[in-house]
Length: 483
Image (spheres, helix red, strand yellow):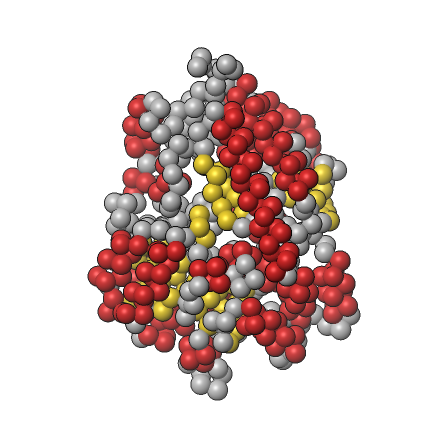
């Protein structure tokens, strides 16, 4: 039998478990960490991308860290993309990649979709934005409301961050309360009250069932930690207890039906139902952050789970590749934004701009139930084949996801919430990412992928083959141990 990768995971070697507890973060795979910065995959990456390296060095002089978006950086430097078409992108060195990131799930139809391009080009000749309402706003709002029954009224903005900020502010204004509850590992943008416990070190995060709110970055208002509660994702009883303890001042519960940045983890039905029931009992509002999960179904995740939240935030695919955010929900709550009442001011120079509305309308018209079902079947095939790849190579790992989304985690243990993701090893993510890049596969550095409608079964087979080759490459680069 072939030798196996020396993987130090989940009880296989007790000293690794102890080391992980000391660090309070993901375990390291011995024999890999040093090679992650000097292995053949990085040498090959540098060889293939000299123009990107040169641009990156120039960018460092004018952009902090060489880019204007934190999540796109990875060492030794990110590739600079020149163009994209369908499910492929090309970097400035002429290397072509199959794009399994799709601007972090926002491009459901891939790049330069003909109908989106045609519609936005035509609108550009008529004007891009106006200091006045336009019919396109009404049309896109009607399309969203027809797909998501809980959206009685809709408001547009320019990012998911703006959408969740406005939704939380509306909940606090409507209820007259001051606290919110979010899930550990949940990412809802970059404003203060949601930059809490997104990726906290385990040693600082408190008990699993009673997480301690931790600031995700410097510069937040010091008082915000007193008003943001944190619950473990997919733990219904823990969530019920925390809600009960703070029910009198709890304005809102915000949750992703599929925890995106926290591991691509689907919510358990009972968990979401408990959030719905307990929020109604205590008078708090339930906010579904469907910025990512809207792609899972014609009516988003709330259609799948048969749960109607009070408010919903949207973004990503709703803008057809242009900056967008949206929030909607019960008419009595959304009435707070009515300028005739002036209870909540909500302005933005590019809110509901003509180009974004046009691209969004074209995108949703092409995002039919048939296409959703087809892409979700491809996603299920991808997850199953990735699981087989790990199993056949004897590498302890879990594959999570739902619909057209997938992620991998190097652990033997079941992945249910953020704590499980954080306890898994992260050492292989960097070399595996570079190895996949060298094979023309564009994935996220943290180990996740999403599909787009230009993709077919052969594209799934291609990334699975590249995945297997990359895993074998990493096995060969480590010290083998006998079975």
